[in-house]
Length: 135
Image (cartoon, rainbow, N blue to C red; front, top):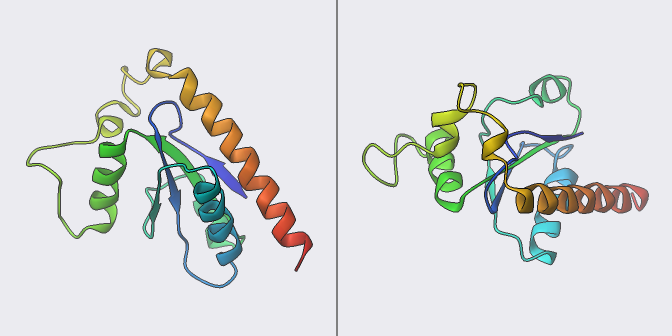
């Protein structure tokens, strides 16, 4: 299962890195697509809560992917994986200031991000299909 969440703006792809052998093909597919596309990507051992949780609980291999601006992607990584570290005192990634607020609206959408995301998601799914066909 490939879940897209928080994908309306930014240039850096974020993705979940679930542990375990059953999830390894999904993580490898995302990493390969990122490398081949020369796409800035940040893997999250601990990813923010998203719609993938029910699939993970059931053991269904999955990945959550989304976009942020580079600094926000790294700051969010630190928030969920960095044991309290931050990039700058008082800094809060843009997505945390707007998600699920009245400011969370279509004016934030960046068309190039949507286009890039659609292309990368398709590549990830095709890579998974190729990988699974050769198993």
